[in-house]
Length: 92
Image (cartoon, rainbow, N blue to C red):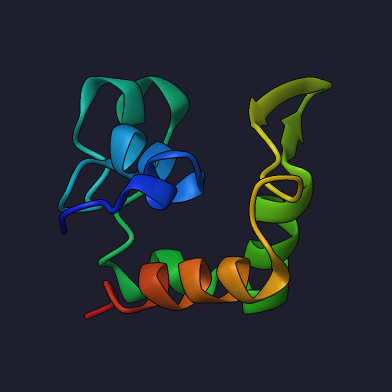
């Protein structure tokens, strides 16, 4: 996937940085952050679209520590929905 200029400023570039172009969670940063293989249907079944949208919009904290930055101030609601759909498209 080639990123367009606007996408470089959004969560798409962060997703690809952490997961790699394959979204399999094999990159060093992905392993450090505990990113899962988003091609695995079992991994995707753990969270709903609404939970993914909320995580992208509001960020994620684990044990009080920010583990994913929020993108609600950079992405519109339709953009966040599109990002979730893109991640869902990896599922086998």
